[in-house]
Amino acid sequence: MKKLNTNLKKKSFVATLLVLSIALVTLAGCGGESATTATKTTTSTTYTLAGTITESGSTTVQPLAERLGAAFTALYPKVTVIIQGGGSSVGIKSATDGTVDIGAASRDLKDSEKPGLGETVIARDGIAIIAHSSQTVSNLTKQQIIDIFSGKITNWKELGGADKKITVVSREEGSGTRSAFEELVMGSDNKIVDTAILQSSNGAVRTTIAGDPNAIAYLSCGYVDNAVKVVSIDGVAGTEANVKNGTYKIVRPLLFVTKGQPTGLVKEFIDFCLSDAGQKIVSEDYISVK
Amino acid sequence: MKIPHHLTDKFAKYTVLVCAASSVIILAAITVFIVLQGMPTFQKVGVFDFLFGTEWRPTYDKYGILAMIVGSTAVTIGALAQAIPLGIACAILLAEVAPNRIRSFLRPAVELLVGIPSVIYGLIGMVLIVPAVRHIGGSGFSILAACLVLTAMVLPTIISISEDSIRAVPHAYKEGALALGATRWQTISRVLLPSARSGIIASIVLGMGRAVGETMAMIMVIGNAIAFPKSPLDPARTLTGNIAVEINYATGTHESALFATGIVLLIFIIVLNTITTVVLRRGIQKHAEHLT
Image 1 (cartoon, rainbow over the protein chains, first blue to last red):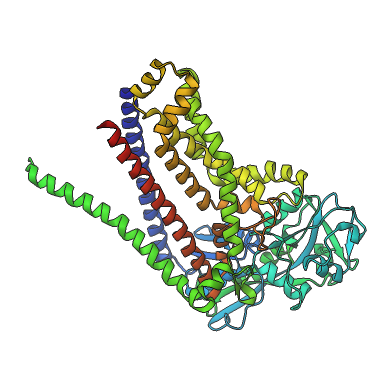
Image 2 (spheres, rainbow over the protein chains, first blue to last red):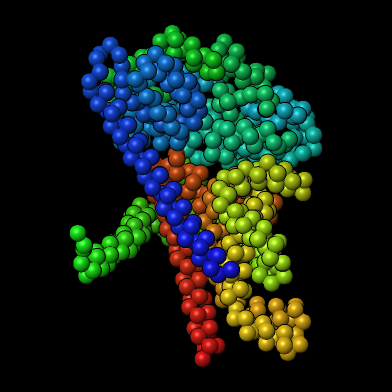
């Protein structure tokens, strides 16, 4: 038995070595590739764009940026667009630090963040109030929503629904969607109740609501799908149509932030986002700026 | 060409030295970095207010992590309370009771449990355990749900190390007990378990370390609420979760406060590690005494 064990150990050691060496070789390969991309950038002609654009920030902007990036690289195959999440504050900070070419934000910039940054509004987005698909309450007043999220109303029966405790679901502090919701709905006097379940992305909020019959949350309109029910505010539902025709008021800008004004490849990409083709992609889930 | 032996010896010696030094340097770098980043918070908020403040609202400059310390502690104790009896029972089964055929199947299964990424545990917790807890009461995202998920994650650590230490008990002990007419259970409970005690305690402390450090799975099932939890059915937040959930968006004092949370965690872990080392050393000494 012992002998077998040592044998096994030797074997697994060899296996570990193998895996490690494979990983190293792969890594080395990656390094080589990115080096060639860099040379491509410098030798490319002005007609065919080439190079890498990095973007990080708001998870609200992320799916949109991915689609815009894919469309852009379809036009210019030598361009690589790398999209990452992280959140609005990270996007703004990374752009300021120069660690990414473009930072994405789903809220207005604070005054302290503005110096040295160029901002471009690439789309606008509504924030919808959502509940579980089986929820019978389908309309709330703005005051009722404030009372729910600040913890003054705690039971669905106070809103004409079943006798069930309301589960308030929110985003964490610093989230662009949360700060936009606080600014546009809650106002400065009402804090979001501290017993609220906090999820750290739009997707996690939607999953939570889809699974909990008594939950309520706010969510970027771009993320709303059939898994959840949109609750109207003062009779107007946060749907794309209502945001577009201006009847739904809880709307915020989606920004691309750059260190200084955009130049070169980054400018080409942002111009593409603002072009008719780019805005057509925007209008699939968000509201075009034109 | 043949390299003289004294040269290869020297080469090996310095290579090993550099490797050993690098791990110390990494640890020092991490500690210095976290402390430097977190210090401003202790100066601005105050150590006492930071550790014992019950309100965490970075937007309003309130930085108190007591609720998260309680959250982490509650989840860890809850998980260990379930995992220790289960784990030790399973270790006894694997080491003493189960026939080799069953053991050769169970042991790899337990080891595989360690390798499952924590996000998978979290996902299963979110889809299965959270709705199940919702039937008991509350929203389901709760300390209870977190304890259940964490139990499954800590179990394999406790099982495999406890089993090894039960197996490491000298055969003569067992044979002696049986020869004196002790039953199988008496042998296990009066001879084997006490002799393997130090290893079992070490497994528990290691499990505790894993429980305190677990992040992803906890974020997914505990609800991350900043309120002070009043019952096991309430949502809460762990220290690790606090950092992971908010670091993406944090700037300025908020960011520093998260690093300060890291300092608290680091101290937590250092204390746990010290306990493990002391327990292990005592175990080895005892073992040596037995042999003489």
